[in-house]
Image 1: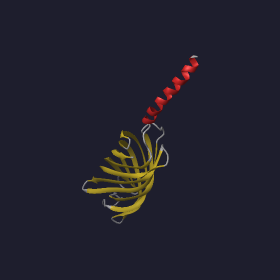
Image 2: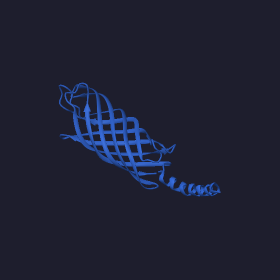
Image 3: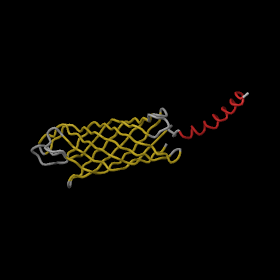
Image 4: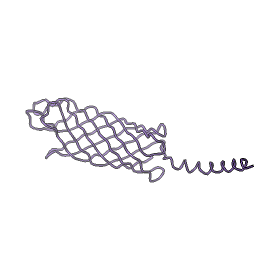
Length: 195
């Protein structure tokens, strides 16, 4: 008798709990976009440089894509970091294909990785030469972590921490080689997310 009463009661509790469980799972579907902004630090190295250039600046990221599954987002990301070393402006820009993975469906924690094309007017200090701003195009890699804080079903904010490697290749600074120029940009930022 008690078993017969418990079965309908359990079914009722499950029916009431299901909408609440669905409400806790963040919405990730269809088209998504985010715009981020925050401080970033550049370290510029090369195998024939006399010193490592370091600069602080700001970075802006714009990303857009789609969601093939609830735990994976795919898209493209444009980045632009700008800073100064002395009186010289340095920039690292990139266009990357990215994947964003949520290890836990109901949580906002994610890992984002990407690769693509980078370009940089940067100022390496090649051995035997005065620093000079030079520009080249190369390959970039990006790896970061973040956490989504939903405000509503289709809107939220995200905290992001990432490191960007821009391999700009071999450059010539005032007639001297600056080989294997690599710009490392570490950034922390806040992004507005639309889904």
